[in-house]
Image 1 (cartoon, helix red, strand yellow):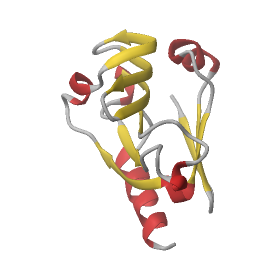
Image 2 (spheres, one colour):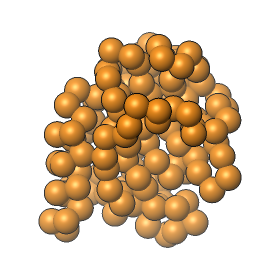
Image 3 (tube, one colour):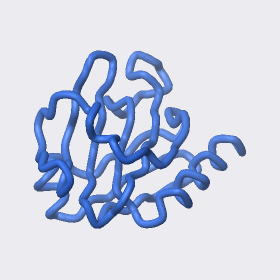
Image 4 (cartoon, helix red, strand yellow):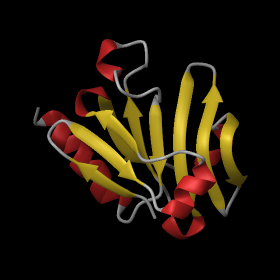
Length: 127
């Protein structure tokens, strides 16, 4: 299961070796200033991800990789055992605050996703 590290100026999603293989991607780091908010997503979250380029997609079991659709580039690392995932919304890549990442959102299956959403949103407000 991915882990999240949140510091004063950066958020990092750390993946295990198997998760890196499924996503065909390494750990993901974003500048804290690029984070717009976080929430636990609903049950049908995977239906509007877009085109998987590259990654692994077995809906209901494993969804990992980069997903593209017009105006959106999502990084996903989720397995069924994680339950509902955490979605972290980021500044648009055209925004100067988004330097360092090409994603507009991160969707990760973590332990206690509501706790992480609250922690991330509190960190944004306290800036």
